[in-house]
Image 1 (cartoon, helix red, strand yellow):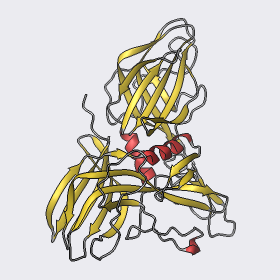
Image 2 (cartoon, each protein chain N blue to C red):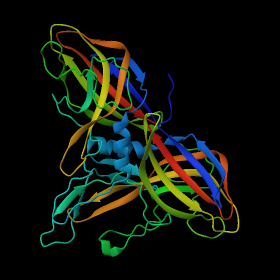
Image 3 (cartoon, rainbow over the protein chains, first blue to last red):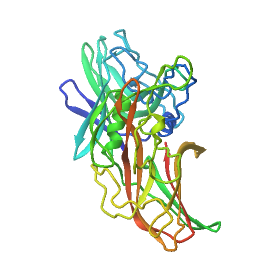
Image 4 (cartoon, chains in turn purple, orange):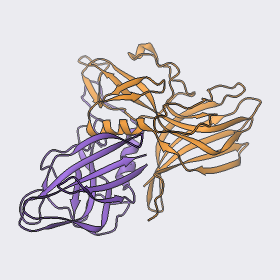
Length: 177
Length: 226
């Protein structure tokens, strides 16, 4: 399995493609929960255990889950649980407007691949550089206790600049065989 | 930049307490069904045209809504067992009791299974080429239970193991050429009943056949790490 982070400009042209180094610990944790789908619930109770493991969906403006971007440059550690310096959602200086996350399946060279896309718009008056990208998913460590967990983080060798006053980029995670 | 595979397959043959062989096999590929079911989990939407181990196209659903048994006011719980690889019972065949409220799953494979086929794996592969069946006869292996468990952290990396044992109780040697991993996923959901089917998610043809001699135990495990 290979993971790529791809960045597309506002014209849909791919401007960066990075094969990522690795998942972080959260990936193994959730994979274990998926492979080992233990379901326990007391009689007459409503349990949502296991419902949401690996759920990557996030709506417009949700900057706690899905594809996230930041300005940090600290090398990736297996124990990372968050981006080094996340760029928050918004239109104030140093912020980016987060679009919704889209998950899709595509056939590439005869194989199914999973794509997770998110568009970021710079509505501020200054350019913003992206130096790190992360993938955060939801899980239920205990009944009805949704939490977010980082499963992948990539530090870009060369930053991506999003132009001021409406510049956009789309970040795509591509998970392939 | 060095890219390690996210998992490897460890193969160990033991007889009378002695390790006869131990090797690490680089995997070939996760097949289409893995990515389709991963997409179901990530997007929480059903995905159609997922081929089960019989080659039948199924729709995999994100959640299961199952009636909760017992109690004076039973309710429902919402769960997802998509990607579940556990096989509690010995043997590779899943045979559920009709009293559990679930349909029978006859001859379904879940967890790790072995075969003798040598055809290359392609993304659309949905089953082992030639299954080595569960049993004590010639050409068969006795399948143990299959489970996933977290291993100790090694070199800073967290490890996840999927393990199964296979015992050769026959008089002859069994030659293993292929290893597969099967999971369970929900294919029909109602308020009272969930139907599952079983899907191949990984298949690897061994670089060198694994000989499991009479009286030997083969330990096969997928080792995932960050």
